[in-house]
Image (cartoon, rainbow, N blue to C red):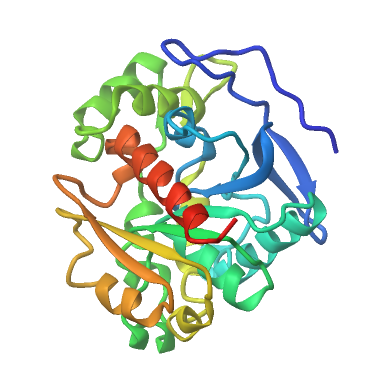
Length: 303
């Protein structure tokens, strides 16, 4: 499988946006973006319902020259939200498979939301050996949640996502809808433009739909119940920085400080004036945090 970069350069951005390519992961084709660089690899794992292109402003802000990999976890394996969804356990296994297939050794892993939890499972249960991890608002629900049997209608997130507005008559109507939603109000301008370009698909008739369908997003939310990540945290041996948004709606539901206490090399950080979607809101700050962390683990003897 070759890694090909297209010639597209997004307005106001310095780096070329790579072309999406795929890797067979035990019978499924996992898409990913690849930025060529040095021998040390870095992996970015996105949140539920989003896409790897949104990491581009963060990647532009890195001051080291790692090769960068960003898988696209949406519907590569399908998944019925009414029948277990797309298991995060399976996604974690596929992430590890991707690393073995592409000779990605001792990566620095940055995972946001679902991507953070999937990274934990991959590192603790499927043999992925990162040199360091940054978990941004990982989804670590109360342990009793993972013992429950719950359907889509009763799931607090899947029930909303499966009813999400996902089709518009034109690009202008779609953009107007996004601009009217509180979810996107504090996004960085470049990230929002990337979402408009890559998170939506223009159809032949001129109408527009979400690239990650409501059914796919609901399937990913339901797949989060497939494995309890809490017992895995003490098994992660590398340095781990866990980041929480100061204004995150998950505070009180996700006990980030408990997670840090269970990680042998865990450190906590809070980002002021940020919610759950910190990489979309503050990509420059996230890049600065990554730069500092990468230097710190190298200085501490974690090459």
